Image (cartoon, rainbow, N blue to C red):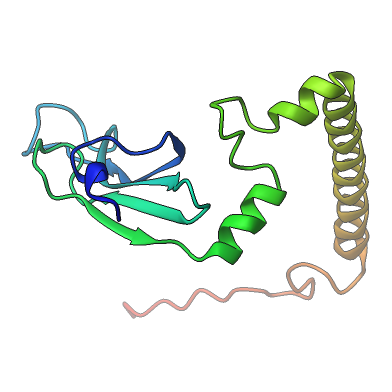
Length: 159
């Protein structure tokens, strides 16, 4: 890693990942009921060097003001796959998919709506089909508890 990065002069962050635990805390640690607190365990940030090498800046304890920052190179194949999927945004700080969205503003929205409608229709069909199959199975003659008498016998042990 270049030495000026250690002083905080590194390229713009392309992606930030927070690693945390939810539902921590509560009595007796805090005066609140358990389940509402979140503990941030680690923060990873992806930056890209001028030569195109992806680097990950890891802070193992972001809540503590210290200089325990670790740098390591990220696999270029993973970076290229994320970049092709437009999950990293532009290097100029633009939003995710910035150039494609600017070229055709209705295209991504129309595709997302089409995907949502298709997924909703498939979910509705699967739910209705599942309900019909369950009702059909419950209506069979051998379904349910045994119908012959007596189903239970009470034995009196006091006599």
